[in-house]
Amino acid sequence: MRILVLGSGAREHAIIAALLAEGGHDVTAAPGNAGIATDVETVRIDIKQPDLVTEFAVDGGFDLVVIGPEAPLVAGVADALRKAGVPAFGPTKAAAAIEGSKSFAKQIMAQAGVPTGADVTATTMAEVQAALDSATPPYVLKADGLAAGKGVIVTDDRAAAEAHAEAFLPDGPILIEEFLAGPEVSLFVLTDGEHVVPLAPAQDFKRLGDGDAGPNTGGMGAYSPLPWLAERYGSEQAFVDEVVETVALPTIRAMAAHGTPFTGLLYCGLIVTDAGVKVIEFNARFGDPETQVVLPRIESGLADALLAAANGTLGSVAPLVWRDSAAVAVVLASEGYPGDPMTGRPVEGVDDAEALEGVQVLHAATGRGEQGLTATGGRVLNVVGTGATLAEARERAYAGLGRISLLGGQSRSDIAAKA
Image (cartoon, rainbow, N blue to C red):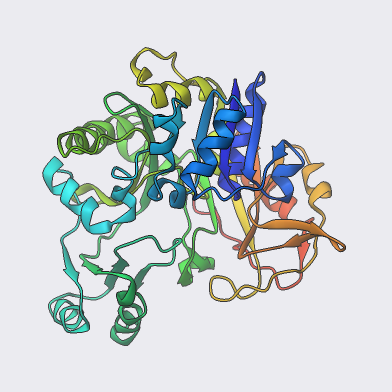
């Protein structure tokens, strides 16, 4: 299959690596990054321009376009591709509002009867303050629109909550949500708008520092499978089945009833509370860094499933084949992340890390220049360890990380430690 993958992060590198591992696919990335460019051809185009992407996909004769990040989806790239007859894995602009607007997502959840926390939408600081007055700490505030993983704050500090609202209100409404206690789980669901194929659950680590200290980030690591989830539900599959029946399918049906049918990948951000599973958020694409630990566990069938979701035939596709393995990803971030990251610094030791058994380095924000490989953004690399057990995968991930150097680099030392 000839496949175009849109995006430039570790999520897209993970998708490309999984497709290449299947064999038989000709993959191109746009725009990609320095690491992706060592694996496949990369093309520099503005992936938020529907006409440009469509022209390139048609001229290149691609069988499938996989849209990685949220911005092209919200820009309507999938709409333009489908109009031109090119299968696109990703929702329409209207359906992508389930991620692009937190308030729209809450409306869909209410329509679908999906369990979630109570919320209030505020458009002014007076409304924010009134909502905080009636809330019990910790306070949960979310920017309504896209914010690159930085629009959420969970804090006991009233002043910090108000400062967050002041920062994001100029761009749109703020949601003040009920705080939900419990471990978080990410579950990806492939869908053609009617049928769903769930992937394996994963857990990510949003806070910058060990012990979940520091500010929220786009994610500092992840792991899969989740042994504690299997213990709680009897098996991971029992949990997955419950989420499909109570969250994924009702949401897909509500989206269709709303006139915004959803195809592609529905990311279910969940929390396991004492009162049961509840939805924290939906995203309209593969999550980062969870993708980096879920896809390495797929042995075959990924490309066929992505194409079937794009063309409406997911109900007849062969089941995915999974490896009996575990994966742990640890993120290496630049100094200053998630605020103002220091870029342009050399990154060394990647080849040494990948020489280790069961270690894969997925690039998130890298470039090549006179100094060789350099950091070009906040989250720079994901070091992924795979193994027969979670302990082995974790040991390999950190062994790989130990061989890589980046001046001022930040990483957590406790990814998957409790699991």
